[in-house]
Length: 119
Image (cartoon, rainbow, N blue to C red; front, side):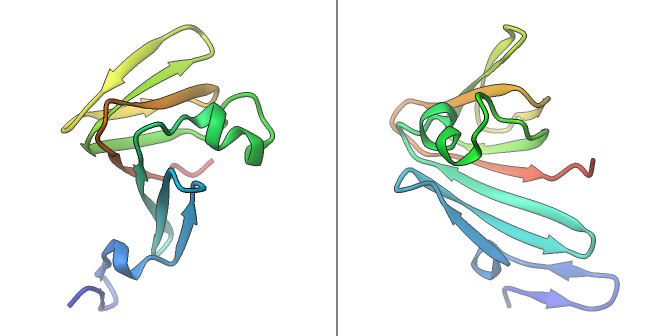
Protein backbone atom coordinates (compact mmCIF):
# COMPACT_ATOMS: atom_id res chain seq x y z
CA UNK A 1 0.00 0.00 0.00
CA UNK A 2 1.57 3.30 -1.06
CA UNK A 3 -1.16 5.68 0.05
CA UNK A 4 -3.41 5.58 3.10
CA UNK A 5 -5.91 8.07 4.45
CA UNK A 6 -7.92 7.49 7.58
CA UNK A 7 -9.14 10.76 9.10
CA UNK A 8 -6.22 11.35 11.45
CA UNK A 9 -3.54 9.60 9.36
CA UNK A 10 -2.34 10.42 5.86
CA UNK A 11 0.55 8.46 4.35
CA UNK A 12 1.94 8.86 0.83
CA UNK A 13 4.99 7.91 -1.17
CA UNK A 14 6.63 10.00 -3.86
CA UNK A 15 4.91 7.70 -6.38
CA UNK A 16 1.63 9.25 -5.18
CA UNK A 17 2.83 12.86 -5.49
CA UNK A 18 0.15 15.48 -6.01
CA UNK A 19 2.45 17.32 -8.38
CA UNK A 20 5.84 16.76 -10.06
CA UNK A 21 8.07 19.56 -11.30
CA UNK A 22 11.04 18.78 -13.55
CA UNK A 23 14.30 20.75 -13.50
CA UNK A 24 14.83 20.46 -17.28
CA UNK A 25 16.77 17.20 -17.14
CA UNK A 26 18.70 18.02 -13.96
CA UNK A 27 16.26 16.57 -11.45
CA UNK A 28 12.74 16.95 -10.17
CA UNK A 29 10.64 17.64 -7.11
CA UNK A 30 7.64 15.59 -6.00
CA UNK A 31 5.09 17.66 -4.07
CA UNK A 32 2.97 15.81 -1.51
CA UNK A 33 -0.01 17.41 0.21
CA UNK A 34 -0.73 15.96 3.65
CA UNK A 35 -3.77 17.73 5.01
CA UNK A 36 -2.73 21.37 5.54
CA UNK A 37 0.97 20.49 5.21
CA UNK A 38 3.22 20.20 2.18
CA UNK A 39 6.36 18.10 1.81
CA UNK A 40 8.65 18.19 -1.21
CA UNK A 41 10.99 15.35 -2.09
CA UNK A 42 13.62 16.85 -4.38
CA UNK A 43 16.20 15.01 -6.47
CA UNK A 44 18.99 17.27 -7.75
CA UNK A 45 21.22 15.62 -10.37
CA UNK A 46 24.97 16.25 -10.62
CA UNK A 47 25.54 19.60 -12.33
CA UNK A 48 22.32 21.13 -10.93
CA UNK A 49 22.66 24.70 -9.69
CA UNK A 50 19.83 27.00 -8.61
CA UNK A 51 21.26 30.05 -10.41
CA UNK A 52 21.57 28.06 -13.66
CA UNK A 53 18.53 25.77 -13.62
CA UNK A 54 15.88 27.64 -11.62
CA UNK A 55 16.77 31.35 -11.79
CA UNK A 56 15.46 31.77 -15.37
CA UNK A 57 12.06 30.38 -14.32
CA UNK A 58 11.93 32.13 -10.91
CA UNK A 59 12.90 35.55 -12.24
CA UNK A 60 14.87 36.39 -9.08
CA UNK A 61 18.64 36.56 -8.58
CA UNK A 62 18.54 34.05 -5.71
CA UNK A 63 16.11 31.51 -4.27
CA UNK A 64 13.45 33.32 -2.25
CA UNK A 65 12.02 30.22 -0.56
CA UNK A 66 12.57 29.36 3.10
CA UNK A 67 13.78 25.76 3.46
CA UNK A 68 13.63 23.31 6.34
CA UNK A 69 15.17 20.17 4.86
CA UNK A 70 16.61 16.75 5.58
CA UNK A 71 19.35 15.46 3.27
CA UNK A 72 18.73 11.81 2.37
CA UNK A 73 21.71 11.34 0.05
CA UNK A 74 24.31 13.22 -1.97
CA UNK A 75 25.94 16.55 -1.20
CA UNK A 76 25.03 20.19 -1.80
CA UNK A 77 26.60 23.58 -1.12
CA UNK A 78 24.30 26.45 -0.10
CA UNK A 79 25.58 30.03 -0.23
CA UNK A 80 23.45 32.78 1.32
CA UNK A 81 23.44 36.40 0.15
CA UNK A 82 24.99 37.37 3.50
CA UNK A 83 28.12 35.36 2.60
CA UNK A 84 27.42 32.32 4.78
CA UNK A 85 28.18 29.04 3.01
CA UNK A 86 27.75 25.43 4.09
CA UNK A 87 28.11 22.01 2.49
CA UNK A 88 25.50 19.48 3.61
CA UNK A 89 25.26 15.74 3.21
CA UNK A 90 23.33 12.63 4.26
CA UNK A 91 21.68 12.73 7.66
CA UNK A 92 21.90 16.49 8.09
CA UNK A 93 18.97 18.80 8.72
CA UNK A 94 19.22 22.37 7.48
CA UNK A 95 17.31 25.63 7.66
CA UNK A 96 17.94 28.23 4.97
CA UNK A 97 16.44 31.70 4.86
CA UNK A 98 15.38 33.24 1.52
CA UNK A 99 18.19 34.74 -0.54
CA UNK A 100 20.54 31.92 -1.49
CA UNK A 101 22.11 29.92 -4.30
CA UNK A 102 22.77 26.17 -4.10
CA UNK A 103 24.49 23.49 -6.17
CA UNK A 104 25.17 19.76 -6.17
CA UNK A 105 28.70 18.67 -5.27
CA UNK A 106 30.15 15.47 -6.73
CA UNK A 107 28.80 12.90 -9.14
CA UNK A 108 25.83 11.58 -7.12
CA UNK A 109 22.31 13.05 -7.01
CA UNK A 110 21.39 15.00 -3.88
CA UNK A 111 18.01 13.94 -2.49
CA UNK A 112 16.33 16.17 0.10
CA UNK A 113 13.02 16.20 1.92
CA UNK A 114 11.78 19.78 2.31
CA UNK A 115 9.05 20.64 4.79
CA UNK A 116 7.26 23.76 3.54
CA UNK A 117 7.07 26.39 6.25
CA UNK A 118 3.93 28.48 6.06
CA UNK A 119 4.49 32.23 5.74
